[in-house]
Length: 352
Image 1 (cartoon, rainbow, N blue to C red):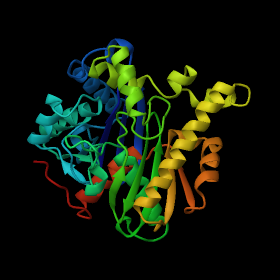
Image 2: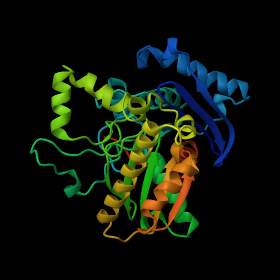
Image 3: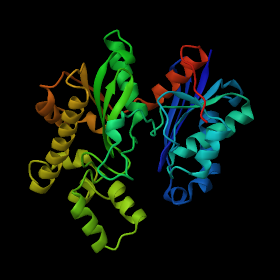
Image 4: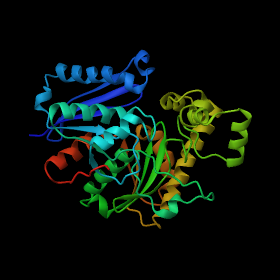
């Protein structure tokens, strides 16, 4: 029996679970005090480890019974999708924050250290830097600038696999458009198991979202940033954390905003724009797949809202049928994919 510890660390919370043979036997979402989250990520490490150990102790699970550790992938160099061993090279890149600073890096850092101590393997699955873009999707009109692939790869691929399984096909046998809608929104064109085009969800390229600005007019953006005398990291923070519904409506609480939708014209216009821009990007991906589309999949926290999904459906149902997978399937996907490696149904890749 394979017992797998799953670690998915975010900026303000830790999702931890243990699976036996792909069945969850214990799971918890820990919200951390601001006194902890204000610390640098490496300063948070010991506290997060203690949280994981306390969770295991409370659920009477011994570290010695674990077969493997599955971790949410952090910011690494661009790699193709798959399940990867956390080796020394990956650990070094995660810990140095060479490719960017994000709380998800801590998942692999802690997972690798625990695995070394316990002498069991640790893995990441489909990290946010999965890059399977076709060449023409990278090209911009500036020679020194290329588009990047940074998106909700883990959940996008998880729901695409689940859809394929529901129609008794493999993921590499379907063409689907997946819109993951959360704090940021990414829309991917999945062509026979590869995400050949997707917007960069980290800086908000694509639709405006609860926290991100979305694509903006170039001239207006650089003039505005110059006028505000913003440094690159300040602009980055605004585009990725302080824009979208937060800036337009003063809140990223979509449930509350929807309750005010009919009475507040400002809120109605902002939400309608988010829906419209998401639908437009789905249409863009339909072009990428040349109209050969088995299904459009709506997922992420926003997909829990029937109000939002029905309005998107009105725009795009002529393209292909729509399936909604509300919320995220990250924990299950991490456990299932690592269990598949243990049982030799999937071969893990090496990060170099």
